[in-house]
Image 1 (tube, rainbow, N blue to C red):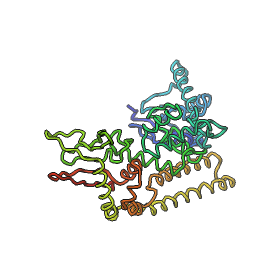
Image 2: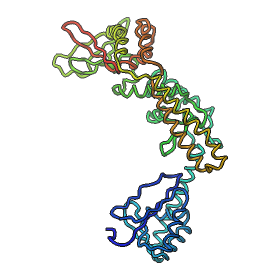
Image 3: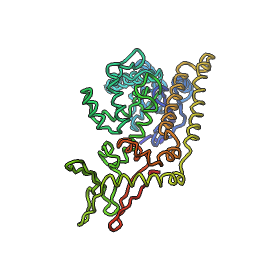
Image 4: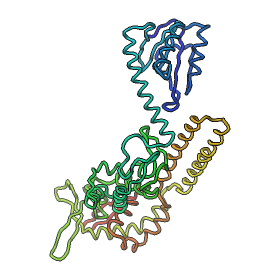
Length: 434
């Protein structure tokens, strides 16, 4: 337990490259005075100066590394604190670790641990400085790129392989299919998890993502355009709503049709005759003793097209849909304001108002905020839903599409197609996404 007597002061130091100003976890300690530094140690010098003429019993610090940038500096500071009769208590990990006031065997372990922490922080500072300069993180360049002097450079031998993967996914919306296509065409074997990582990686969009999760945009030449990246994100979000393995199914109704009577999803079965192939929709797991019947695939497809042409426009008109254009304009205004801040930083630096490190930190923060705003824009639908609804309400539009193209548009609007049985007949009910 902390002592209930004596004067207690506390000191914290924050490296602007690594952290923000911290909250000091002090437990039950009652602090009489708090000194805080951010980037320099002016307050630490003030503390030492104050207690040459004042007295206190305890100095609380988060960690010994807060007292200096090197082992020599920390040792010098501890010696001076000892001469001021201040007992240093380390609160790291919310523990209680008094620092020996005189050299002892415990100092060996203490300074070995401190030396390890110093090396770790030096590496972190190096990585942080690279982030401020928008330099690539350490390690091997992603497939499709090679490392240049200060940025990733497109590798002309491997970038076409990555681009082919993206193009195939954009066309068919199938992750597993795109992985198989890559292996078949280029003999490039990747796992499904690697393919998914490619689809979502900021690197292929011309951005850098660091271990902190922060993204800096437009740092190198992209393999994937912004429009293509936005479409991939929308396809991935849409596929997450679908039953497993139906996202890549060749038929447009796959994963959408459900029997309302038994609540079973309906799978597509293929029957080969002498002259042609027949497709049927059958309940996958009907619990009834007398199983629900099957339906001709073409008949369900025809009724779905007829009904979507009839029901989609009024459904869109009645739905509460946010004004996408207005939202985009709002975000673009914020982006414009932040760009103005970036443009002003060199002037403030040239006038001596900001030093180089502060200007770099501010620029880095603004650029990460801009990346977040750009992500919000990318997640919006590309055009107004009401405009699309008028186009797709024409039956001929659907008849001119291939099955993969129909699959794309069905999943843009339809969440589920329910089969409603009515004696000997049946009807369909469309449940739209909005």
